[in-house]
Image 1 (cartoon, rainbow, N blue to C red):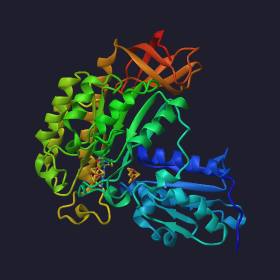
Image 2: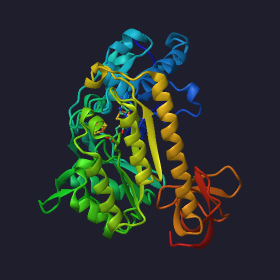
Image 3: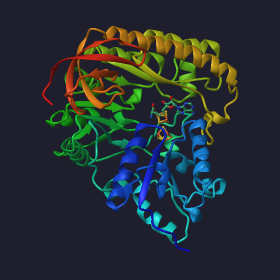
Image 4: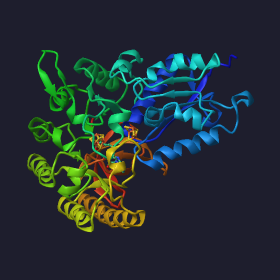
Amino acid sequence: MSTKSPKTYSIKNYGCQMNVYDGERMAELFDAQGMIAADDKNDADIVVLNTCHIREKAAEKVYSEIGRLGKTSRAEGGPMIAVAGCVAQAEGSEISRRAPTVDIVVGPQAYHNLPQMIADVTQGKRAVDLDLPGLDKFSQLPPKRKTGASAFLTVQEGCDKFCTYCVVPYTRGAEVSRSWSALLDEAKALVDSGAKEITLLGQNVNAWSGEDDKGQMQGLDGLIRALDRIDGVRRIRYMTSHPNDMTDGLIAAHGDVEKLMPFLHLPVQAGSDRILKAMNRSHSRDSYLRILDRVRTVRPDVALSGDFIVGFPGESDADFEDTMSLVRAVGYAQAFSFKYSPRPGTPAADMADQIPTSVMDDRLQQLQAQLMADQTAFNTQTEGKICEVLLERPGKLPGQLIGKSPWLQSVHVLAPGLTIGDIVTVTMSESGPLSLKGDPIMRAAA
Ligand code: SAH
Ligand code: SF4
Ligand code: F3S
């Protein structure tokens, strides 16, 4: 049986920034095949669900979306359905068993093969590709060109850390770094297409390493310094980092690379050494706090961000209090916090003493109240400061644009005449928990 080849596509991303980046690469791949993005995503000939497996809820969302899409079979004009990303990698052909309307299952390292897989489906086959070949996809994808004012650039993928709760080492594979030259070429292409800010991405971005053009081994700080030398790059960020890979060089870069924004997302997960050990985090509460101190010494205005898990198996009230005291000691500018979710195949899922949901709910509520208070306080402290804002998207009001401060706060700027991609100097005012207002002072050179 042969089926019509799709002409229009829609890609729906779940999960982390790397999925956003992968979604952009898939779109460029489809564009290169002559396909076009569907005006109305309910009308696309192929729908790609670019999925996340990190917590149970994230994975379950996918099945409800497949259920919704699959109501119309393809014989009746429904879309071809592709499941990509980390659920695809983790569940593989189990997906097609559970959801027979799915035509394609493609893992995060294999999506460069989508055109061939689509061709197979039009021949009446179901297509599954879960290879984890490391860096193959990057050499086979069309060069990255499309970008907004702020661009993502994946420099490193995969994880060798094996925290006992986490699926990422299984869904993204081993740590691999893209080459120096590929990254600088991509950064330059992004700048040529209008990017002002580049956020380097990796599951463990600070584990990036590679040889530079002189054959010298470099770490992420070397790459950041090379990006700093590209004229059109105005701002550099990176995420997500692991405390163990915060090298001396990277900490120093926070002090002397002006384009490196004063923001560090450094997940700690928990404040109790006993729990950190059970999580296999391989850093302690103190070693984590020492890193933050060192970054603050070289860059006193750095805004700190983190990830937290409450209710890891065996977490006592005293352990949780250690997390709360760490949070109070740090004073995060923003943070993500989650209830522990047991993931199939991870060691923690089989640990004794799983914590009841009601206890997790309580702890999460306490933690989030503290984090939100700290975030609000941080925003309040920024009031009156003069800083640059990179305008990234339209706001709700006429003439309003929304951008980011150096500290990654959302800033609303009312300034007719300015456009997306402009960097504007503002005085910060009217802070709230989630954003501030920026009153333009002068227009910096774009
Ligand atoms: N590579 C990054 C981020 C990994 S996933 C890092 O190492 O920090 C993003 C966040 O999801 C993690 O930092 C962690 O806080 C959370 N997370 C991962 N697995 C989880 C699980 N099983 N249950 C709840 N939260 C989890
Ligand atoms: Fe997951 Fe830990 Fe690796 Fe982060 S460092 S991706 S939390 S295993
Ligand atoms: Fe989710 Fe995979 Fe990212 S599990 S958080 S999409 S690496």
